[in-house]
Image 1 (cartoon, rainbow, N blue to C red):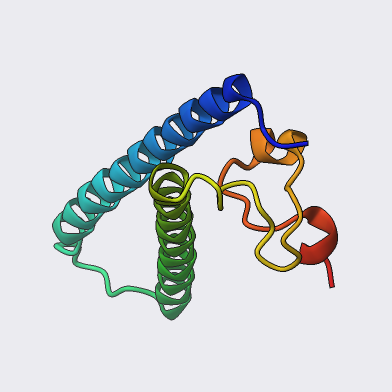
Image 2: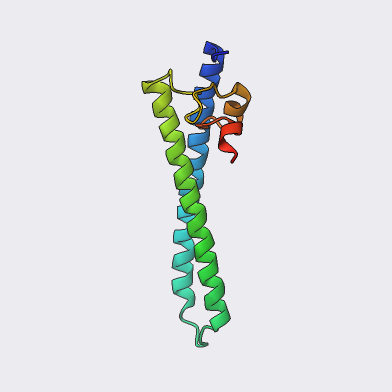
Length: 123
């Protein structure tokens, strides 16, 4: 059954809420990273050399941070794409890209930027 006007309104609101949340998280992450970078520069004045294990830990933390930022950026792009579909081609929003079937409202309520049904997304 196609999405009702009430469901569509709710989902558009959810998309904007999720977009705001992810954008806020990314901004906070960037601020935290910037603050930590400044603190790290200040702590390099130590008279003791950096231990190799510390360098490995720092590198791993940087990789994890980069991975989180990349994932959040991708999620933000997916949300923006869904908002674009919703506003410019509303007939395509909520339709599975793999099967052409309607994506259930329950799935869209949880992940409003979903592009596929659960069944077609699972290999």
